[in-house]
Length: 207
Ligand code: MN
Image (cartoon, rainbow, N blue to C red):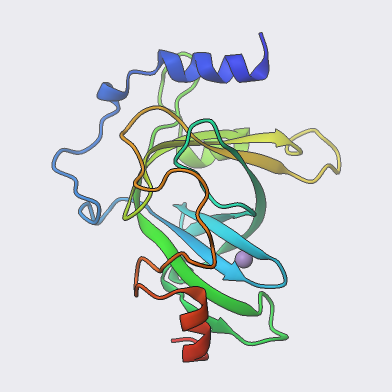
C-alpha cells in the first residue's frame, strides 16, 4: 500500500463524530484549549509561519505557500525553532538586521482540538504524535476551520542528517475552511487588525 493510501485509510477509519470535542465551542470559546496562529512574514523570503501551542511553546513550521482549505493541496511545511507563546499575538515590523527582520501579520488564529490517534484509533498525546511524525487536529480559526494533518515525510528519527520536511494537508472532516486554495499573501488581511502587510509596514515598528 502506498504511503498516501495508508494515510487515506487512516483518515477513512476515523469517526469524527466521536472525537470528544467539548460541546458549545465557538471559535474563541474554550479558553483552556491550545491555540494556533498563522502569520504571514515578509522576511528575506515571503512565507507563512504555522504555529501550534504544544507543551508550553509554539511548535512552528515555515509554510512557503501557506495553508490550503482544499484537501487536494499538499503544502510543504519546514520545521523552525519553537517560539514562546506570546508570539501568537505578534503583528508588526521586526527591524532589519534582527533575526526574522521584516513585517508580520496575524493572518489567522484561534484554538485547535488535538485529534491524533494511533492506528487502532486510540488517542495519542499530541506532542508525542508530532515526535512520531504524524499529528491530526481540528482548527477553530477565523479563516481556517476543520481537520488538518501534519505529516513528516523526510528527516526525523533515525534518518541521519536529512533536514526535516513535513506536509500540511486539509483532511475531510470537521467542516470546511472559509478560505479554499492558496491565500495571496500580499492581499491577505490580518485576522487581528484587518491590515495588509503593506499597511502594517507603513505603520512602522511593532506593538
Ligand atoms: Mn517566519
